Picture (cartoon, rainbow, N blue to C red):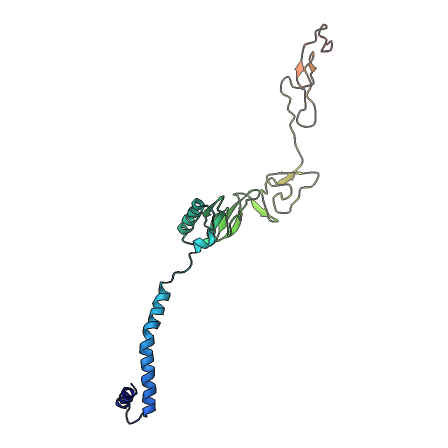
Length: 221
């Protein structure tokens, strides 16, 4: 075997290379030829290996039916596990966290509207807007035409002498008494309605005319 290596090295050696240098180059070439199939086989093996299924990582249900349902939802969600909300027992759902008003930016983060405002989820953030006609004053939506704390303009508080805001202007309270026929209760403005002559006011606020002397429950009119 040694003689063959010597002969082969002599053939490869030229005038500018020594015999030792030829042997070194020949050994390196042979080692590469032997090891290259192993190396390529290793690369092919790595290419065949599959990454861990993200759905199986997040779906860990003890019951098969729940596990299958969870995996189905996850895979229909294109494996975006961050968009999965719920649990094995209550059910798993895939939400658009960028636009879902009940799951905005994160599972369970609901965008809630305030007084006179609407709520929406835009790019994963809750955005509140005043309804038509309302104006935001100090962080709260209100109507300037009727709010005594913001009457006509934000921060304009109606005084005690004119505590009512009407059409954006502070004014004194006005009240029109109301006394329906037969009614003897309050008139809606702090007063009382009176019964017609010959009738009396019953405890329930209605007028009665039973003034018979022999009636033990009513006074003699």
